[in-house]
Amino acid sequence: MAPRSAQWPRYLRVAPWLLFAGGLLWNGLDPANYWGDPMVAAAAVLAGALLPLRDTLAVAAANVTGILALSVYDDTAGTKGGYLELVNTVFAALLGVWVNRVVARHGRRLATMRSVAEAAQRAVLPAPPPRAGELSVAACYRAAQTEALIGGDAYAVQETPYGVRVLIADVRGKGLPAVETVSVLLGAFRENASRTADLVALADALEQALARESAHREEEARTEGFSTALLVEFTPGRDALRALSCGHPGPYLLDGAGGVRRLDAVDPGLPLGMGALGPARPAPDAWPFPAGHTLLLVTDGVTEARDAAGRFYDPVAGLASLGPFAGPQQALDALVRDVERWAGAPRGDDMAVLAVTRP
Image 1: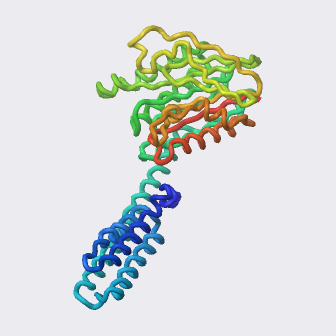
Image 2 (image 1 turned 90 degrees about the horizontal axis):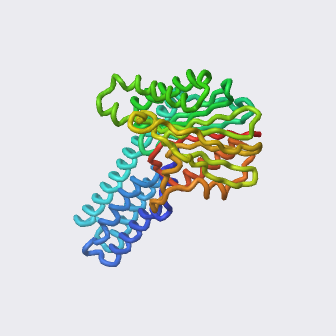
Image 3 (image 1 turned 90 degrees about the vertical axis):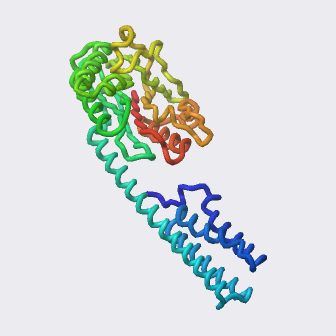
């Protein structure tokens, strides 16, 4: 895990030192009233919360040394008032160190929980093969940084008699219920992708599998549980793709010259699990997919990432400024870095990205 001081803006990292200097100066200008003592104490506690242990100890030592020097300067050393001021300063310094250890312990615990969650997620969601038919493939999953719960993002790639088929999905919720749904969804995709000739029929098979899985759940889970999904089919020998959206964000098509556009469905359809609430699923959309192009499929951890001002991340603008890319892994890495730069830390949602390139 990165040092805690590296996660804060620079002005926050120097704030304890500014408080210390301001408090010491104030005490020097008005030694009788000790108006600067609260600032000195606040510097020690703030350092414990924001800075590594070494810097926290440095601020604590500076506080104690500065107050001792000030006591000698204003002739309060050895007096009752001087002792009390020194005791208060030492107490604030020890409090700052204690705060630092508590924050560090919880940070290590959260990092461990997050690593376990990511390991469990990878066990449920194994990486796809780097090659599928004539296509190059890359994928990644990033857990949310605000919690250690396993998320509901999923992806899969499978070679079938009808071409290479891919799935990316986002299950509502987190934790074990989301993992169960992801497991059922991926199992149904792997079972039906090779024996279902039509993408609409494949989506219906996924819907039926989720309905069977939710039958034993509580009423709220049955009525409010759903999964957005995007199914894409790459037919061998054709410079085109077919995509069926079940309420999922459209993919992004990257050409070899750095151009980017979003492939929005004419009719995005309803998410999986909500098919009984509306009309039949729309027909898949067809798009050109020439050689040298890359298709990026993402979950809403990308499209709903916000910066400090609350603005949503725009993958079209972000990718256009970073491309062109040599292959799917380069495009995927560039997108993930740009989203993390945009959103900063902590990031509030899981993020899954699947990249497919026709070499």
